[in-house]
Image (cartoon, rainbow, N blue to C red; front, side):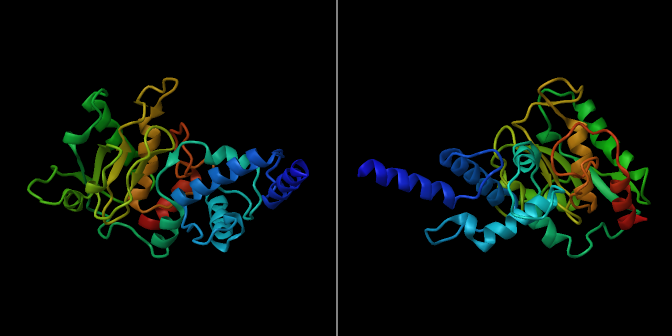
Length: 278
């Protein structure tokens, strides 16, 4: 009798979960759904149901899943595919679909396109990459975006004397810095901490703030060596945010949210930056 009951319970549990492509065991299915929920909690406006229920049946889960698939350029439905799972397991930008959809409901750009300022936070640069290489990459990113849009940038000295760390960046314009895992003190708000090595590589705030933070825990490099994260590829992406661009759904674009070794600004990126600055 007990064995029959357990068998029935197993079948009921397995069928209650959404089918996930080739996955057909309840344990693996559950682990995958938990993985998706964790992703949505981090990168969407998903709110975990308060009542004890199957979270995948909630409207919040379904809406957030559709939004997450939209951000990744996938078909906008609640189907779980191996392609979707592969994408959410990759490293990416920390800017989320929910925050961007809210922020970009209005056009955000620097008000004076002829005087966009930036500075280098020399107290918070990477300890093993030569400073000259880091600064060169930051400035090359600005030069490369500037090739395709009508704006001007100038470097200013890193400001001193503010009691609140995040106020430095307001006086700075676009600020470049590496940050530790816990660095809410670098922001005017909370919940901006990194997640350790892997997944989130960097994030950026929007005009008229523009701060760019690189996760110090990542294996950064400038030579494309195996097992490292390319500083330029991440810089050109985050600078797009600092100039006012949202994520792109085009996988060839530098503004696609998933990390890739990219050196060339795509036509989709160019259309976006020109829409802001001409």
